[in-house]
Length: 138
Length: 364
Image (tube, rainbow over all chains, first blue to last red; front, top):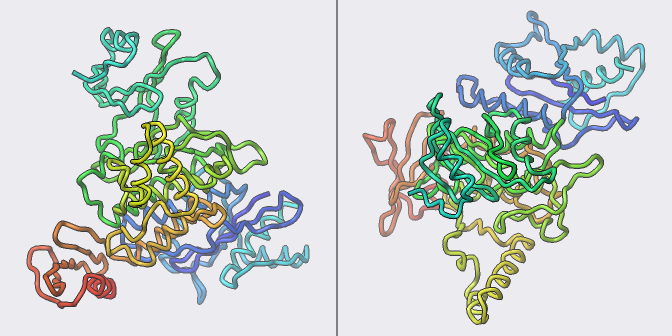
């Protein structure tokens, strides 16, 4: 199974792409680790940014794409740019896409006791999502 | 007069008798086929008709079959395909008004951001070919196979005659035919064409877009004085041709064909690094896939100024500050002026060289 885990941190999208089809979980190193939108008021940049995100998805061709779900209110809630970026990701067609809540991740980790690995700390939440997708499918 | 005297009579007869199309132009750039441009008589849209000879083999319709399967904004769409006899068939695609990239670049100075946008668009189309379910390599990406919509600089990959599917478990295709100046080093060395070989070819196109020296019309300029001397000493045209090809291939393998020093002064270190990575003689050191190349271009573009040249001036535009810069070379200095609208210019600085002026503007 091939999955992409995504966390949106403001205008920055952090990725991790995992492939478990060989029996081991391997990170696809050719997939960019993060992409950042600089000017969300620039239509041209917004379109290019969307194309880049979708290009990443096309190139890896995952079975599932998971997005770390952030709450709409409270101290750690997502800002307006996060929602804009989230919308651009959701426009991607043809693949199963789902939101993954941190409570679901915690519950599954508790139940299955699996290890989450990622190269960079900023990928942590994206990795949580990707490992959740893989282990939840078992 | 369409200069189509070498086109088989069967094709010309078909066009003459057809009530569907009115052709007004023939192009010798049809590769292994015969390429006409004109209008569809019912819908009145401009179209390109590519005729090709049928050999009875399974690859006869490879190009239209490939085009019909792929759906991407940067890949030419096929509108129709027909037989005209048991010897010839043709397919119909829209005519793209800017023509091919080689033609489009002649006498035109593409802005640096336009160059990036065009390369980005080609990568966008190529990524679809490289990805599931196609797993194709194009193998012959070059200026003549990229069509440009002149209204928005949108590129289309326009020739699928060379496309090959990667077999399961293999990351390369063999027996590919590429155009000499675009041949990836690994194809020359080992006869293998990887996805990264397509990336290399886009690197060459990007180099052309940025106005690096690419003397296709005066080919001996690719050679050094010594090599030219040796070339002219060879007795026959055939041996000269072989020698020339071999020299070019040697340069490609050594990563010495394209001279990054020939790029305009505003193509700075970061953009050159992107080019070097795309053109690395070792395919494993190139961008591993299209999105990685696209990301590098995207990251560069969003924080850089848009540069262009209108002889004798260099211009730059800063999108964030909505400000234009004009660089004028004087005998002993370079004058830097700024303007909000390219009409009212005021002096900003005077520096000793063009390099310093570019650096100054980029730091603004």
